[in-house]
Image (cartoon, rainbow, N blue to C red):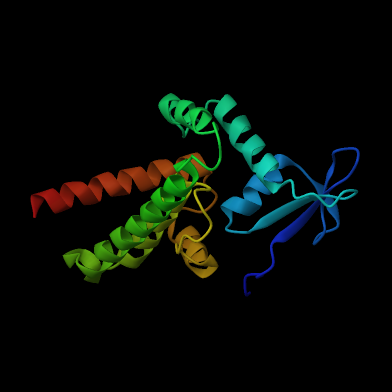
Length: 191
């Protein structure tokens, strides 16, 4: 199935409820975060005024995750962000953050490519399934840090799920991936 090119349109009603125009149902902030993690662009607009509210809701999603202890941004970074709001014209922070995330995504993609291309273990049976699991792990670790990550496609994720052990929870799968990575590092250090 081809990915839609248009952003998913979410309309906010006067009651502050959020309405998914594609599925014709109401969604929560957590649903929107899930769409974004899945690589989907989202646009949230006020039904009455037509104002774009996307930035406001994305910041609210981040704030909720941070308040639940799912901290990604160190206090120093948050403090510097607050300081950068002196005037938008003087601030280089938005451009710097955008470039930093782009560099992070690029480095991640190159790391995955290098693991596959330069690894003498690439010809081992089961290596492709392990590589797909590592890519899924990296994508999970990166969470919503941008939407142009070129990680595994839906087919790769299906293969990864088949390669893993059936009905595991995501915590169990993460533990399995960590164990596999540790085993692989141990084998590589012995070579």
